[in-house]
Image (cartoon, rainbow, N blue to C red; front, top):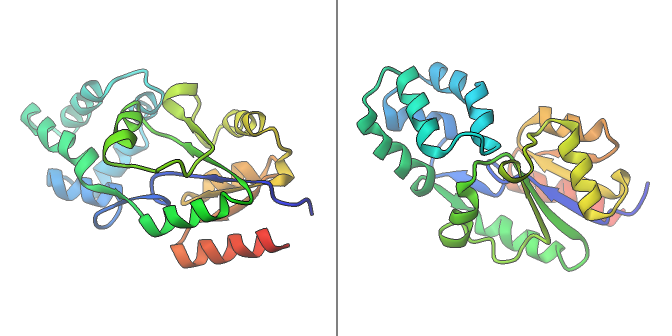
Length: 201
């Protein structure tokens, strides 16, 4: 096995977390909407278009509220939700900065364009990532193999020299199919332990 030279991190669900529950459960609570409907909309074509910056926040919020038969006044709830209901896990961030002393770090995220503004204001990652690839910039979405290929090109490493961490198994499997070692995030302790084991080999 090649020595690990880079660790690629997902954002939401790994480094960025909802103040309670998950993105979907909390959004369902904030809008007083059925969870099944929220999950359906999170998997929609429009959600992907939002993530690759083909539609902006306002257009996506309009889509959500129309689908849920809710008044447009609830856009205020959505605008507050996307920023105020999430936080960067400082323990995880400190861990990433620690391993950054010995490996290259990358953030690889499916996220709409507001991620850049929020990471300058509320979601400060303080230089923890040597590279950042966001779907809104590259018009690619995990688990499309092309986004992982792009990540490897940016890093300048072979697949077997990299580890990818994501809370969605489908995204991890896609990376593994290209030869990247994968870790499914199920919690901080598990993820740090699994990664430490890999880095010590």
